[in-house]
Image 1 (cartoon, helix red, strand yellow):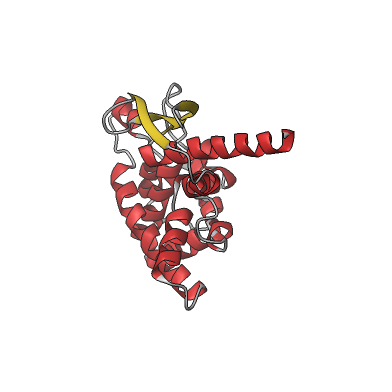
Image 2 (cartoon, rainbow, N blue to C red; image 1 turned 60 degrees about the vertical axis):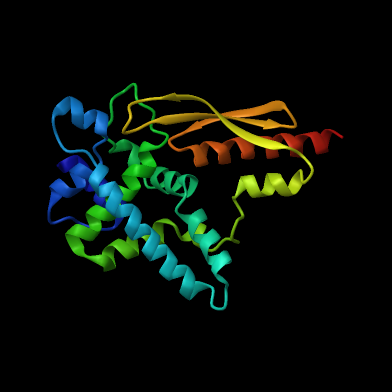
Length: 219
């Protein structure tokens, strides 16, 4: 348990029940091999808490904003990239218990959600809320849709036929990895993998947007 003191410092909360935090850092593959509990149940609860806390914050942060704006802002703030970025910034990778051959791509996002739930179960909503808002502050104050790459790609290519296609799926049923190919006007332009189809599609769109930007610079 001593090794988790650094994680408590990063989270800004000292746990009364250290086992909750230990569970929050345990990936399903590691749990299966060592016959212990994984973070999956905590992840489920943390996802719901994140949605509520971020929705409440955005409601207060942007008075007068309509439902569409608030929804896009919330979806952005709790999406894969912000959660993974926040987890990396806090140094979560050092504490994640995962088998060596397993991708950490989705695991850090899941761990972040699990830690949220662990804080909530151990100390209540206030410390959980404080952790979320501090960790995600930079993503809560950006323009809605700023990182919605699919929408930006559609705006950049209004006449193009844009298709996202699943070309492969790997990993166990409880933790799949989807490989998506982006096709524009019949031409494959990008492939990407993630723990959900939506996230892989966003990655593909991001790659395509960068390529378009580079083409414009060269032109």
